[in-house]
Amino acid sequence: MKFTVSQSALSDAIAVVMKGIAPSSTLPILSGVLVRAADGVLEFQTSNYTISIRHRIAARVDEEGQVVIPCKMLSNICKTLPDAPVSFDVAEHQVSITCERSTFRLNTLDAGDFPEFPTFALERSVELPANILSEMVSRVWRVTSTDKNRPVLNGVYMTVENNTIRLVATDSYRLAVCDTQVETSTLEGSFELNVPADAFNDALAITGGQGSILIGSTDTQVVFVAGNTTYVARRIEGTYPNYKALLPAACATTVKIDVAALNSALKRVSTVAQANSAVKFDISAETGTMVLSAISNDQDAATATVEVEAEGVSGVIAFNYHYIFGCLNVLSHEKEITLELQSYNQAGVFKSYDKINYLYLVMPVRI
Image 1 (cartoon, rainbow, N blue to C red):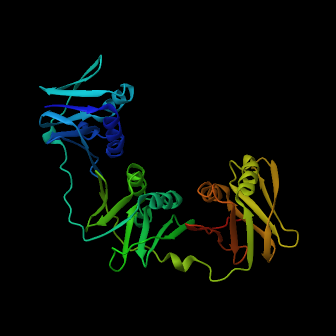
Image 2: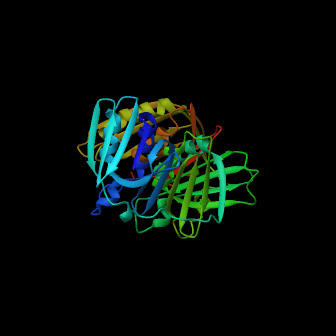
Image 3: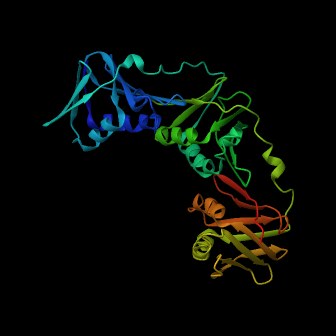
């Protein structure tokens, strides 16, 4: 097996499939990347039995074949090479890698032991703009639960209907919903799928440079296809909870807040709230202010005042400041956010309206 490929294309390909490497496995084969060379094309595959990734690039193939090479070592080598042709020569369980005046020799693994790439026949699929979907996923995927006993909450619930994409995520303490309008004329009816959060984020991270991405499903799989990359993950079974029932039907207090001002104030106040994560939000509609305050277990205290536009009932509510940062961090480019409260002992709902609409519901904590 012999082939030559550009360093830049090789480095990019390895970066794509690295997401499929098992972080810790007793099976050495899962730490490798399967490289298959044929008909002027290099195919790279990785798998950890939960996800599988395949990526193809053009190359000069002198002798066809396939081999499994330790992926992290190959990645480290690629990063040190100059932007020049890289030649591979495989013989007797070893591969010789040459680039200009540098040569490496690595032991290889048997390609016959590598897991076969999953076959699939999509039951339903939809093609969406990759850049918009990537932005939406970045806003919600961290809100999913990590509790393996509730796998249905480990995913991002996606619906596509009437030219609207909506993503929903929750961990029972908070809920994130974002939606936007896109052209989906190729979709007949509606599309819904509960996508594993990590897989959703990783798939968009490695395919976000493409113009569009195809997302489809089978009985057991979620499939992403963009350009020369295919990403297959296990599908989450079960019915997603009725998140709409959590949304308040009305609100007694509405507060318009400058995102940058709230973020700065919360950073200052949270310095004394490391062990006690509760931060009070004292809202005054009369003075147009919101005072943030926190007290540590050692009775250290901090306050910060933010000017706001408040309408309705004044009062005090407390939130876990980590959860509020979770909202503000994904809205760093937004100017304003609105907080709606039905009462001061019920969930607070943060809203932002732009090209991508965003809703973030967070449960209060006792004070």
